Length: 404
Image (cartoon, rainbow, N blue to C red; front, side, top):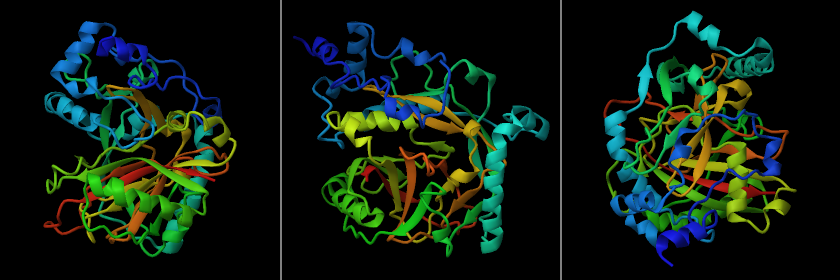
């Protein structure tokens, strides 16, 4: 049997990881959406052997021998495939961006007032906290948000990581810029918790001699898992992914580095989180869901103590359901889902200035508890208050599933 037909036979198990199958446990926490047209469905999965062979031979022939193994979560060769495949498209197409909308246009795009009432009350509580703590702000900074186009009422936003040989546009996501105040939580970190805000800052004294793919997998991740169990008082923690981010080219051959992501987003939807649980724990997922399961990102800067491009968090208490728009992210081996974020003036954004080597930021990607914040929108931003000669930020994030 040739490789192509072998992959077809194993579709949904080893190569095509289509996460569209429903997961009952996620339905209660997922934001309801109506069916929308998905342009990428015409290209994925490949409909014929010729299309498959064009992809593999021209873009990343390594996939012919690669198979998904849930026991090897860090074996993600598409990081290099998609980086090379998308680089040309990034330069050719780019992201469409337009200036801020005027007041009338923005008001016309808002959801009904009844939807926002509860969030506005929570935003008022957060504003009281800001005043009580007298939180300082960075200089007003530019953030990028999804434009509420009529297109998205019928066509789902998407970002394609498919090979450049397809005719599919890389994305239909269009953004606009907003100038926001970002509040510095330094000295008042305990007021912002995973339970209420969807994020929290903590001290994690894990020292690393070297930061590279090898040391992260063999040393850093086991230490993070052990620290999570102790810090969150949970029964177990499983790290399934990691990313370096930064513009630093040092050790580029030993680090799979992405640039900071300068757009408001959430890394996962409720549905994609709990489908991922099935991906790594197929025999136990149903029983695991009967108890507490959280999906948490642990982010820390490697370049300290000043970051030119820190990570800002939007307190979940200030996020309206209508602010979150589900979007597809299509990789060569599976389609994932995340949230794009619409701008809402009730949102409140926070960061911690000058994070040190032992500072970490934890934030929610998903949670099967209905009593706590399930997620936290976030975005990197250029901090105009730092010195002009500040080195480019380098950071590492690990994504975990926390049990109990």
